[in-house]
Image 1 (tube, helix red, strand yellow):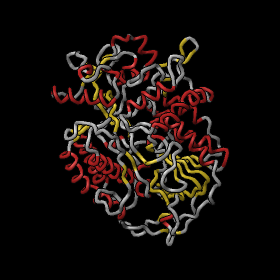
Image 2 (spheres, rainbow, N blue to C red):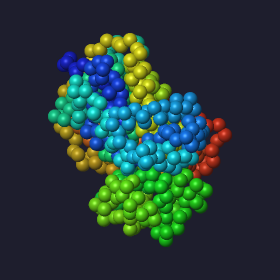
Image 3 (cartoon, one colour):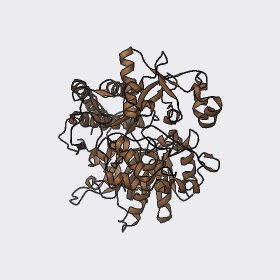
Length: 538
């Protein structure tokens, strides 16, 4: 690996560096801000985070007909044997408390006759989803933003390049520690931020696929940076494809919430046939992996590009009350939930694997934490249960803040500054776009909902050439946001492929035509950074 040289320009110094401004980042920043100087850094505004697009809701035991044990068992069943049960129990037990806290800070969840209106989604045996119409993530994010103090340092439009670790310092022989991170500022300069504690809350990697419900910035930045710094990753092969993403050239990341099916919407083919019961007795309310594979199989069997969501029988009044934002977006595209079926396709939605952590976000590197979708806490196992993601974000953020504040803080470190002397003129943007498009295409065609040994081998061969080209670009040219994201996207794609090749079975979200059965003993797929590995982007 080529090493950049460093100079001694001063870095921004903080006690707590939070990277990412979704639910996990906002919550942990709000809990840490009374105890020191906090920098909250993000590539864009909170409205660009995945949280903002979360429609369905947040799961919690809030009804006398429900129980914590029932929620635990639903989560374990969806996770197909790979959930860490102690994590599931810790997170689920905090659900009602977290939701009440959100209400206390101003989150306006829907109510009915003075009580929370709870909906049901696929894989849940009870109504336990608190929601704010069909824009729950936005409602939560807006309430959390109001908790942030003016003293908090907000760096918006700053793209994280890499973590700074003690291994960047010559002749350091102790355990690897995180000292902060490098960021590309909006003016094109690279800024160093030194911190006592660094928290990655950077979300998932949906943009590695052509069809995704994720916003543009979901390029796996936290996972990639942590891997390069030396953190293991777990179960990266488990990419959840949401069954009902809009199939439309002008609305390719519009999600049609699981709550629509929870309230009775049907999935049908072009002839109006409800085919999901051919694959599972729960039909549209089966877990997402089953429904997504059913749609994928029917599309291939019938030779068509999409299936359809039919909510017409719910009626205009009910649709307007519970799904006003979805209907508005569809009307802007010339479609109407009330009067027509809506074309849908499965799309990459959630990264169930990630940086190996515990429920408080501890990683293998001292003073580095990872929370939310970028982490693998063990809550989701081989398949995430609907509406458990916002719950995990907030519970992990709470445990993370408490863990950090219970420690004796280390001194604020002195960090080497970025130096790009000697780099060549900027690489042509067309080369970046070409590599970006090729990665997303090969991942969609070869490493999608259904996989095989041959498809994975082809993907690995093609990706290796792209990774080598990207590495050459990165170390020879000035950094840009596009180049940073491309580098991260290529690395994460490689981790997904390697993990998929290591799993010789079908389980949860990973389905292989060469291994269509599940092994008796469930095992995690753990990857440990190794500079000798060929499929790695430096």
